[in-house]
Image 1 (tube, rainbow, N blue to C red):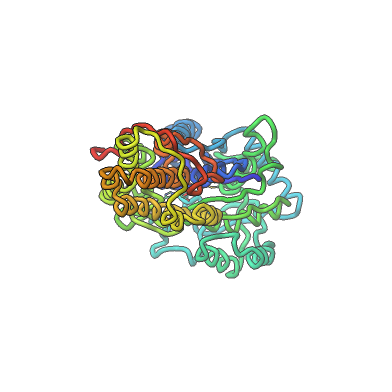
Image 2: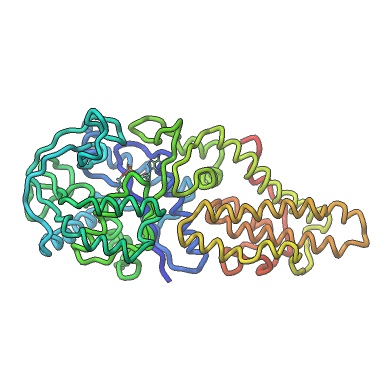
Length: 498
Ligand code: ME8
């Protein structure tokens, strides 16, 4: 079994912010979960370095686009390990092999009869690098996303015959109800397709910062086609061997809703035109909002992920964004709600459960537990948990899966209160009962920790080490599938003074 997950590749016109970290963290959770299943996983992220957004930002700074790309690509690249992201490759669209592959695939599209010369006239947003139809424009000819005034473009281009894919795309959506999720985004993409597809520019004449069009050196490819192809080209050169046959088609493209149309309409059409198999799933998440607006570098209302990690640690950030905002919907984030979740859930519910359990085993049993079967009262509440989590992960329902696990964290806290081990410890005749309660608690903690590992890997690794059970395989995640025998002391996982 193989699993291939991607994030969008981010524009290098500015530094990374929490919105970028969000998608990358989500993809990391999926990658880690599938590794726990024993699957061979490839996880790709990277940077989108061509096109107007980058060229304009570089000119504004008085530097060359390549310089700006080098500077900011480094920042995106170094963000990944800081947020514990385990990507297998980091693609930059200025990689030479990527550029060659783009030329190859798009020449194939032309050879297959889907490219022609024409003149484009219409509205264009240089920040989106997107041509806007009349019905997508805000009053005053403004971009609905960036609120800037659109420019009127007239340009001789090569066009991609998107209109030829109207019917094949409608068929694709009819046959594959899970091609795009959530359903609202599937419906949105389908209604865009049904509203009638117009051909789109494949090349730009006015721009020089891009991949050269091999059959006409006065043009570069329109940045979106160059960028989308990253998902395919990376596999051919990320390793010494070509991984395309092994990992293509991609299992999941994770994207934000701002780039739905490119991924759910242009991308499958382009692949059909090139004769390449289509990805299996596209999952579209919502926006992280700050004070009701999309967090974005052009609006300047961003949370700096580096600062957040500095204060709370990477695990807290990972947990917060996937817990606070239901994955697939928009949701507000703020420092206040971050602090609240950190305190009430990570520190109090999980952190305390871990410290109490370990401390009681230390105090009452000198860190050793005899073998015992989990308490049936607890076992009933843990039944099928692993399967349920895996099933939600298969649908990229990351917040729902986390909630399933968290309900068991709460169940374990209630179990401590119900069985009050400190009372059992006071009655020597109930020693065996105490063994059973502590053993069940430790095994329950091990079970939730294995399942939580994709979300908060560093904390879970520390906790599993203290439980003396470091195995991460999903097959052993179920309550009663593992053994906790010899435990050790653990410093607080989520210190309160953070
Ligand atoms: O669009 N909330 O790059 P980009 C949630 N290069 N996610 C957010 C977000 C927010 N406030 N802000 C950004 C591009 N994102 C193209 C993509 S792919 C072939 C080319 C995330 O730097 C989200 O994943 O503008 C969104 O889709 C992406 O960053 C846009 O990044």
